[in-house]
Image (cartoon, rainbow, N blue to C red; front, side, top):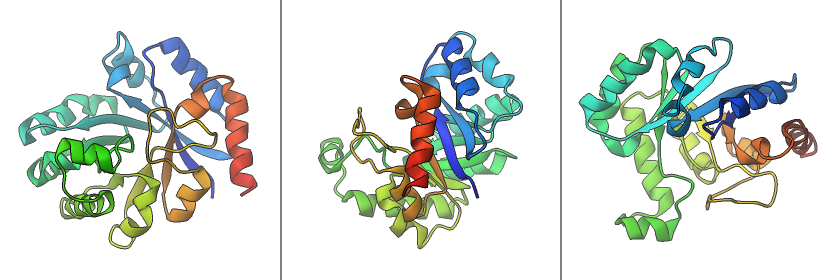
Length: 224
């Protein structure tokens, strides 16, 4: 079975997106493409996504609002026919259930605690729980709302997998030494071993020579 990778297309430049799509293609990985608020809000971004009919598309909106606004947003992007959309689990159970109820064929992913946060960050925000306890609590809400998957760090996947049997998508993946702005990171091999279904990888692939970076990733997975 091919390893599943979402390439994070974090840019506003359509030319760069075309380069990523063209140079990432290979027969050894099951690839999808993740677009966030940066691209969909850029000039021509929404229209570009609407034309990607043959690709697996992950729209990383990270919705975090009152239930009516969250479900209205899902209705507003249904014409794009994307495969996945994210919502912060901290939006609350009512918002999660409302979004799932009208999502149709779109898979709804609950975002747990961002991989750019660590224990110190959580204390600064005002959370009293440790990261592992907080993420487990969030996943229980996602399960209660019947979401299709969750987004979490690979560090928490083993514990999550015991109670959550649907898709687990993992950002904060690095197969080089650069962490960028992430704090809780793991290697692709470690993430898969922990039980992740999909990995989200951006800059380690999209910065520099994309074809070479893809090959480095494949070598990392093959030589593990």
